[in-house]
Length: 461
Ligand code: GDP
Ligand code: ZN
Image (cartoon, rainbow, N blue to C red; front, side, top):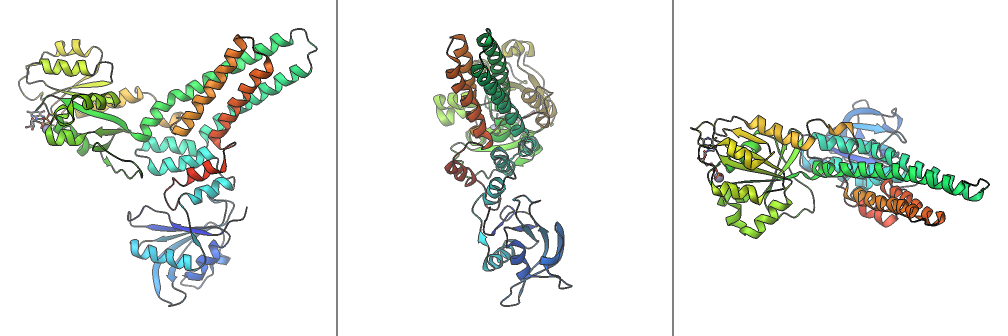
C-alpha cells in the first residue's frame, strides 16, 4: 500500500522529560535527514536499520539549532507500521518538541490524525483489529494488570482464540456440505446432526467462557466502582484518605468521559478502584443527605463494591443494620474501625448480620488493618488465584457485544437441531457465528467502523 509520510508527537502532552516525534512513511528517513546534523556529518539515509544516532535538529533555513536529540531509524517492514519509521527523542519541554514537529512538517510530512499510526499498522497487515484496539486500551490502562490484559490482546491472544473457533466452524460447515453433497450413507442425516451438536456445544462453551471473563476485563479497564458508606464519624473520610495515600492515585485522562459524581482512582494490589462520590464523603459526610435517598440507592446499586464502615468503639446500631439491609445482595466488605479504642461492638452480632461477607478490623488512626482490607479487596476480585497475565480476558465492549451475538447465533444452531430444522437453514446460523467472530478481529468489518475506531485513539499513536 502507498501512504504519505505522517508525523506526530507520540508521548503524552507535557509529561515526562523525553518527548518523541514519530514519523512513518516512505519519506520518513529523508525528511528527518534534512533537519538532522550529527557531529561527524553522517547521513541518516546511509545508516543501518534499527540504529540510534546522536545529533542536533537544525532549521535548514535559519541554520538555527532547535534541539539536541537521539534519532532512531527503523526501516520497514520490521516496524510498528511496517513502513519506514523515524523517532526523534527530544529532552526539551513542550516548546522545543513542537519546534521539531514543525520542522518535520515543513520538510514534507503531514500531521497524523488520531490513531493513524495504529491504523497503518492495521491496514498494512501488521496487526488485526482487536490488536489495534488493544493499543488503545494500553494507552488508557490504569494498572499493571489492566496493562497485561491489553498486552495479551495486542500480542494476539484473543485473536488466536477467535481464529481457532472460526476454523472449527469452517471445518464443520465443510463437513456438512460434504455430507449433503454425497448422501450415499443411510445414516448421513444422523451423523451430520451428531457432529453439529458436538461442535456447536463446544463453541457455545468457549464463547460463554470468554464472556465470563468480560466482567473482570471490564473492571480492569474501567475500575471497580466502589462506594464507602457508614454512619457519621465512623471513619469514612479517614478510610478514603488512607486508600488514596497508600496507593498511588491513578490519573484519569480518558477523553470524553463526563463525570457527574466526583471520582478518585486508586490501585489496590492491581485492582483499580474507582471511588465514587468522594465529594459526598469529603464534604457533607453523608451520601444520603447530599444526594437524596433515591439517588443514593441508585449509586449503591451501580456499585461493584461497597465498603461498609462501622465504629467498633460503639454499639452496633439500628442505623448500621439499615445499611446492611440497603446493601443486601451486593458485594460488601465490612470494616469495623477504631480497634484502638475500648471495644463496645458485638462482632458476633455483626457477623450474623453480615452472613458470609468479609469483616476486616482496622484502626485507621493507627494505620492498622489496612493491609487486611487491601487483601480482602484483591481476594474478592481475583479469588486469590487468577492472575490477569495467565488468561485471555475480553474487556472491550465492542468485542463483548459481538461475542453475545455470536453466542445467540450458536444457540440458534442448537435450537434448530432440537426442532429438526433443515440442515441448510441451520448452516445460515453457523455461518453467521463465523462472521460475527470475524468482526472481532476485523475480518469482516466495514471501512466506516474502522475509521470510527481509529479516530478514538490519542494523537500520535
Ligand atoms: P466519617 O464521618 O465517617 O467520614 O469519619 P471521619 O473519617 O471523619 O472520622 C471521624 C473521627 O474519627 C475523626 O476525628 C477521626 O480522626 C477519628 N477516627 C477515624 N478512624 C479512627 C480510628 O481508627 N481510631 C480512632 N481512635 N479514631 C478514628
Ligand atoms: Zn468524614
